[in-house]
Image 1 (cartoon, one colour):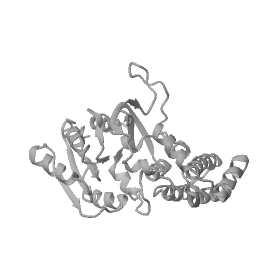
Image 2 (cartoon, helix red, strand yellow; image 1 turned 180 degrees about the vertical axis):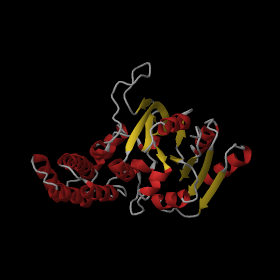
Image 3 (cartoon, helix red, strand yellow; image 1 turned 90 degrees about the vertical axis):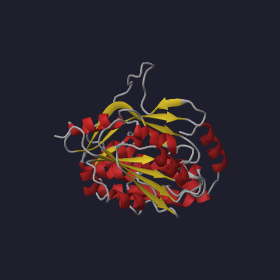
Image 4 (tube, one colour; image 1 turned 45 degrees about the horizontal axis):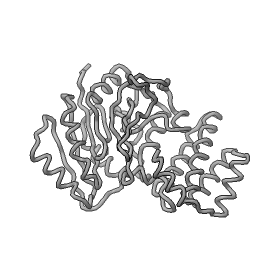
Length: 321
């Protein structure tokens, strides 16, 4: 078995000029000997393209780099899939232009996948950089950096349906399995929840106990728009994924997990005044047999269209997570 198989990194940039240089440097300093990198500027309107071009002109990484410069943005999932078709790596990383790969992440993740034949992907811990510059890890750790919580591995389908047990930015995929499940769903505006659900339905997830990615939490990131007041682009896709999950479910406990997820998303849809999609979530919850005071309250709220999105936005600024 090749101990350093080819790893494909697909780096997507969109209006991330303040961050992209550090992202590229983190790849150049990774030290993994067998990489291929695809850099996509997905129609940026800032000077991201120039930053990328300047960096490539001044640096000469030992791995091959292909660039895709688009004049207009392409839907993320479609963009990624098109470039993935050109890749050759045994393993795959989806990297954002405002995130940083920390030293050793690729080698450690690949080693874990190499000893876990048949696993769909490896995940690790993530360093979250808050808007005020403070940092915290995705999973709880003590002052010495040791984990303070048990990390679920293996069959994570029910856990992923129910809550955010995996930080998707840390994922290193098995490319063959990624292909088998059809890649990213191009009918969706974002990719991570759906791909994790589909992979975990039939495949195992493994965990490497290291901090692999530095993720910036800031107002201009795509994920920050998940609960954008009154006009979220992501919530309708979340509803579509939940509808897909309903068809994938095989057991009552999986339906219970889905109801919990739906009620969580309904709450945030209502708080952010995305009332139409909130009604869609409520309807799906009722199809699954959800009852009780919370469902009744959410139903009434959606009908009244009580808008508290201004207060919600203020609270999200205070606590971005």
